[in-house]
Length: 154
Length: 154
DNA sequence: TCCTTATTGCAACTGACTTTCAAATTATAG
DNA sequence: CTATAATTTGAAAGTCAGTTGCAATAAGGA
Ligand SMILES: [Mn+2]
Ligand SMILES: [Mn+2]
Ligand SMILES: [Zn+2]
Ligand SMILES: [Zn+2]
Image (spheres, rainbow over the protein chains, first blue to last red):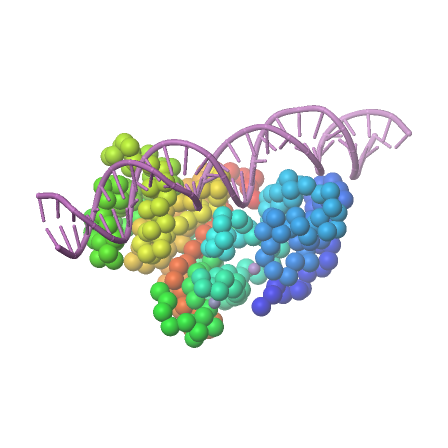
């Protein structure tokens, strides 16, 4: 299922401006791509989409803007089990953290929110006296569909 | 705290041989390095240690052996929040999964086992009908020591 | 509008990992 | 023990994702 669309458009831009950062044409473009993405995108997909809105935008500007958003905790970086090379994927940081499941057969990514996960984070903060800034729970395995379709698997 | 040392030495080698793989001098060396490691090592650290035992061992052989161990589910690959470049870290797959916490200030890696985590995995298998093969829960934040030492953080 | 400073684009660079392929080594069969 | 077939290795070149240096450009406050 796609991301819950409870986000205010232009929110990322407002966040960055409120932090005193300069709002350039390139940044506005990249932020709008990040905000309107319905799936997890990697840097090159992000660049391609940004270039459809502003053809002369450069690769480095995408990387620099992603770095900026990461540092400000406005996006999360995902590995998605590095199933196709070593690239990373990005999504707006959601109000509530979720888990990513990657099917090792069909490649489908499933998202899952869980109270147990929220409680686990609480336990870690308390028991380990560790102040959590970012979490990433990624699970590799076989989705319901692939389990029924295929007989021989792990 | 380091990894629980409840592992039989030579276990990786026995596992691979029982799966019908050829046991070469290079593989034995790399397996012994993986087995005796007390921390999470990246490929180049692994190579350096392997070379102390067998100086002519090559980088590619390390990568190929890591790939082999991954495919057979005998080691886990970690990102550790990619705090120093894009490299990956490796550890013997433990009997019970654990969580990795990375301190964004001092870089310390802490491991944590949790019943809540085990239950969360059970919930995912059941509720999402997803057959879990590998999990990776990594948390970035500030460790107890850095929280008390430093005032301004996050 | 001017001025300072942040940001951009280009090109070159880096680091981590992969591919290619001939030579060496392994396990197995004879 | 060989001989043999199949696997594995090392060296070199290549790829891919991301970074750095720096001069030109643009943002935003005075
Ligand atoms: Mn990664
Ligand atoms: Mn997501
Ligand atoms: Zn699937
Ligand atoms: Zn710390």
